[in-house]
Image (cartoon, rainbow, N blue to C red; front, side, top):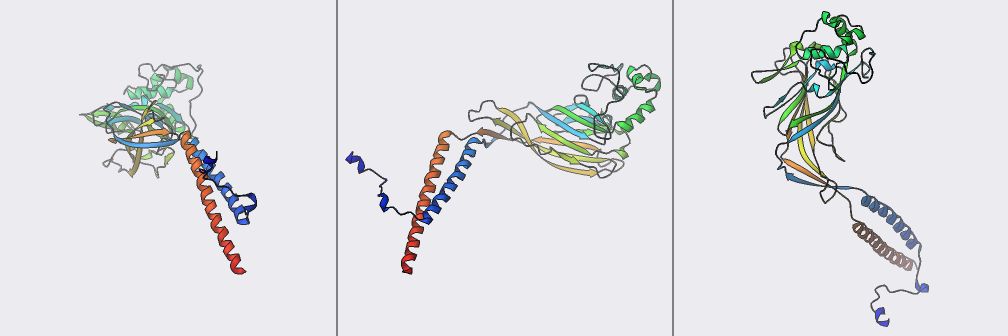
Length: 371
């Protein structure tokens, strides 16, 4: 036992030889306060998730990418907009509004349904001799039938209305009556759903006029569009994203609202750089989420009445980055937390002891000088 005493690195003093001072008490309270603040800060860091990001060259080839869309055109009707995807591989996906969910909005921005029809909720109306353009494959209203016929360039006349049960239920007797009703109530359009694109440079756009291809060129027949001088492409983007969402993912266009300053043909362009991203929930790199982030800048311009400087619409031009971001979700280990905690306690104790000793001798020297 006597041998162990020689190794004691913590020599003690008798209680009667210890001196307690006001400065020492103040330093002790300050140290305790600092220890509590830093302890809870370390605890919060230990319990929080941390993200490690690495950059790599994207070696993946091909594959499809989903575009998740949720946007509103409060001043453009659903039947006035056509959605297409074009890319440099030569693949053209036309009339994709059929693959999305388009809901008509009334002047108050609420979902509009024509006069309630006497059908149950499971009813799916026939489109007769036309192909349905709605995602559910139904023509539940007279307007649905008209849009289906127009998409196929089939005639839609007053004489035909009496044959359509939906039109009779709504009391529509003439095409002009249907159009006037449509102008009054069919004010806006809410578009939601997803599109599949190739992993190459391309664009998808929302533009007026029926889509046609002529001599290998993509065009919109503006003669089939409504009055372009009264076109209002004000839009509200709730979400535009690529691939699967993951914790902490950024959506730069979320909540973006663009108000068209005046009626007439306008072109809105969004240039999107898509960044391949792999998200891991831990260092084991299991349960990987292969998805995409993006950055964007935008440009808009008013078009001439003859459209010689562009076609009106909302265009999203996208390209893929060759660099992939790898995100690893991590959390500090318990031993790392304990090490940090002991280092914190020891550091504060050592520094406070040093400061107290300096302050004590300084005050002691002042008191001797006064004497």
